[in-house]
Length: 180
Image 1 (cartoon, rainbow, N blue to C red):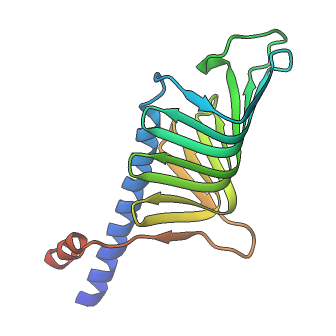
Image 2 (image 1 turned 180 degrees about the vertical axis):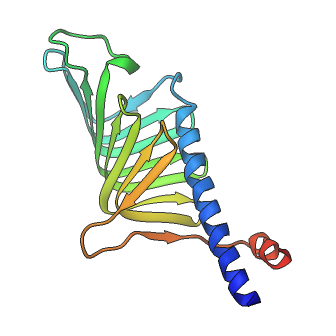
C-alpha cells in the first residue's frame, strides 16, 4: 500500500516537473521579443519582390541570451504584393534547417528542422528524434510543437516510434519524495 502511494506520488511529481519544464521554456522565449536580432551567415540572398531572405552556411542568430545555429535560415515575409520593411509584424514564417541548435538559459533544442510561425506564435521542431533539454532532463519525438500563446507543448513520433521523456531525479528530489 505505501509502495503504491510512493509510486503514485512520483508519477504526479514527474508530471508536475514536466509541466513546469515546458512552461519555463515558453515564458523564457516570450521575454525577448523587443531585443535586437544579430544574424551571421556565409551568404545572404534577399528578394524583396518575392518577399523572402535566405541565410546560408554557418548561420548564427543571437537575440539577447537566445542563440540559434543552423545550416540554412529562410525568412518569409507577409505577402502584400509590394516591398515591405522588415519588422516583427512583417515576418510570416522562419525556417531553420540542417543541424538546428537553439540555446537559451538552461534550455537547449536539437533538431533537423525548426519552423517559427509568428502569426500563430508557435515553434515547431522536427527530425529524427528532435530533443528538448533542460539540464540532464529531456523530451524527444519526431515533432515538438511549442505553443507560445497557450503554454502548451505537444510531442509526437512517427508510426512505430514512441515519444521519450527522461527526468533525472536529484538527491534533493529524492529527499523530498521520502519526507512526503
